[in-house]
Image (cartoon, rainbow, N blue to C red; front, side, top):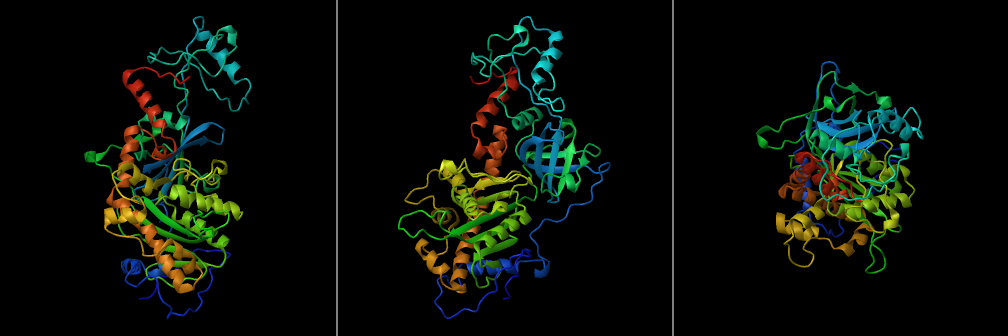
Length: 510
């Protein structure tokens, strides 16, 4: 069978030409291995090889006055509009599979503070002017102050920790504040009722399409709304969660092994030698992109796009470009938050590849790795703004706690237990031998790497990892990524939801 052509990734540094190799050399990976599975996947391709692409289909023409926009929210962030005012940023995917960013403006953050006894309506404007006085008049941080009657929660702290206000000597004694500790994006979600992966609709005439020159994101569609009231939440039909055609990228890296026995590979000294990738659409079992990036030559793999490079720098930059062209909504893998993602970021930093870390959906936002914290933890690994990260390893550790035996949570053991499958039969210590061999031996390593990218996809589908975590985020009323990055926020959301239900405001921690 003819090998599937590689992805059309334009680069000033072209991939190296394959060199002839001695096919008679002993193979470590047999032809009856995962190579056969990849070949069968290639036979299922519908599109002609020359028309295949990893990019999304172009979006339709949008008429602001006639077209409504419906999309599933993937991620939520906060930022500033061109006037310097706060805005909510909702990243999502339309029913047609186009990526979208909706920028919601004029949603005002707020909190409560006890009004002194002598404070009246006549004091509102003077106090507002006093508080905004240190700031530019074009972008005052406080929009308004109002007097409201509110019940307060019981058992709150007794000290307001943010200081005193000198207005008319009315605020001499510090008091407790209420709901000042709710992050802006969470306040928006709690007040509007939007939850993780909600379906949203923007009616015609309620949004403005942002020109390409003014876009802050890499999304195919970017719009602005002047009010949160212009965004409607779609009802769930038959109590069943529906999903957009979300793009899922599963990847795995292989790196050189530290020369000292028992020493863990370090991105400061060891190169990334291969990156295996599987891209699928939610609800579909067969990945529509199967691509391997290799350092040095690699013999063709039927059903797989092989990209080989002489220099590690060129390979990493080509993979970053591939990542952005795929534009995944969900990034998965096995232990990627403690190994693959931080290893790639630190290795790119070592090689001075500034562009590499720009893989979020915000053009000017990069991934930032805190080197002072040592080896990254599950909840400190940087994610990708506008995308979701799901580490299958940590999902299984948290949701399937009864696995027994040494190495029970390694990919090989987990795959054997849940899928009745195993990794390719290559020992960790064989990786240098395969990399330092010829194009055929590196092909064996590539097949090994590709299966390590494929098994997490199988586990994701089999164990319904994504659906379970979406349900947990919805019930906690927090964004999906918060389950990993900011778990304490679940308690904050619960306290304030209780306050909403029982009609009281919640005191901030001391």
